[in-house]
Amino acid sequence: MPSKDKSHHDVEPSVPRPGDRGVNPCPASPEQMQWFRDAKFGLFIHWGPASIAGAEISWGRMDRIEGGQEHQTVPGRVYDELYKQFNPVKFDADAWMALAKAAGCRYVVFITKHHDGFCMWPTEQVRWTDPTKPRHYSIAETPFRRDICREIAQAAHKHGLRLGWYYSTRDWTHPEYLQGDNRVYNAYYEAQVQELLTHYGPVDVMWFDHAFGDWSQFTIENLFKAMYQAHPNLLVNNRAARGLNNIPPGRLHDLVEADWDTPEQQIGHFQTGRAWESCVTMTQCRHDSGGWSYRPGEPTRSFEDCLRLLVSSVTGDGNLLLNVGPTPEGEILPEQVEVLRKMGAWLARYGQSIYGTRGGPFVNGSWGGSTRSGNKIWLHVLEWPGETLTLPALAETVLSARTLDGAAATTVQTPTGLEVSLPTAQRNPLDTVIELTLAPAKE
Image (cartoon, rainbow, N blue to C red; front, top):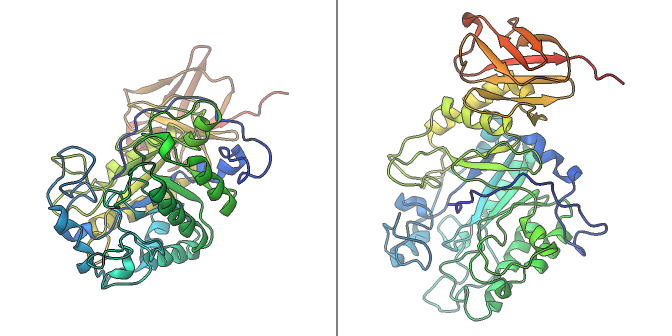
C-alpha cells in the first residue's frame, strides 16, 4: 500500500527550466499539468500474488525489513512463493478499463511492482541467480505467464484513459536492496522503470511510493533524466525520493517534489497553488489501515461515501484516486463494480461541475464546496446549515442560480456575503449542485 504522506503546502509550483526535460529535468509546466488538473478522477489498482492469501499487499509478509507489526500474517517463505499459485484466469483488462471509463475515471494507475518486489510484467532484469529461486520474480514465472501490464496498457489506450504506472522503489526481497552504496539495486530498478516507460506505448504518470536510505545511495537525478527522455510530458508524483535522508536543497529538492502532492486515506485541504491527489481505498478495513489489495470479508465504501470523497477532493482543487483490490481470479468485486457504475451515472449527469473545473472560489468545508470554470460557479451543498447557505462575498454579480436538476434557487448579494436558499423539496440529500452564472467582468 502507499505510505502515508500528510504534508503538502499551498505553494506556487516550481518554474520549469527551459530546454529538454531529459537534459535539464524539472517539474512539469502548467500546460503539461492541465490534463491532470482537468481529469479529477482516477482508478488505482493494487493487485498481485498477495491476493491469494487475502493479506495486505507486501505489508502482510512477516519477516520484512521495514515497517512495524501491523498486517504481518503470512510467513516470509510462504508469501514469497505465492507467485507459484497465481493464475487469474478471469482477468480481463478490457473489462477493467471499460469499467473505469464507465465510472467516469479519466486515468488509471496500475501497480507494476509493490514493496514485495514481484513484477506484474516479464521484466528482463535478473533478481536471483540462485537456481532454487525465480530468476526474475515476475508474472512470466507464474502459471498465468501473460504480460498483465501490456494488457492493461493496451486496454487503457483503447478506452481513451491516461495511463499511470505505480512502481515501488522499496524492494524488500531484492538481495542488493540498500546494500553498501546500493549500486547494484540502483541499476536494477532504474532499468525496470525504463522497461515500463519504453515497452508499452504512451505513459502519462509515474507514481512512486517512497524510498528509504540516504540520498547518496541513489542516482535520482539520472532517474528523472531518463524518464523525461522517454516521455517529455511525463508527470511524476512527490514520492520518488520521499523518505530519503539528506536530500539536497534547491533545484534537486524541487525536482523530487515533482508535480503533485499525495495525501493518503484522507482528503487534502483546500490548496490551489499546487496540484494534489487523495488516494483512498474502496475497501474500508475495520481493524487496520489497509484495504489496498484484496481483503476478503472487509466492507466496501458506499456509493454515497465515495461520491463525497470525490466532491470533497475536487472542491478542494484536487483529484481523487480511488483504489480497488481485485480477487486472486482477476475480478473486481461485484460490490465495487456497483459503486463505480453509480459514480459514472452521477458524473454523466453532473460532470460539468467536476471535470475541467478548479476548486473555489469558496473554501470547502462540512457544508460542501464549490468549483469554477469561466463565468460559472457550481456549489456542491452536501449539508445545508439551515434555511439559507451563507457564503463570503463575491466580486462578480450573480445573474442566475439553478440546480443542475432544473430548480430555481434564490440568491441575495450584499457587501459582506452571498446568501443562497432553496426549498427543502428541491434539495438533493446527497449533493445539491447549484449553478451560479456570473455577469462578465467589467473591462
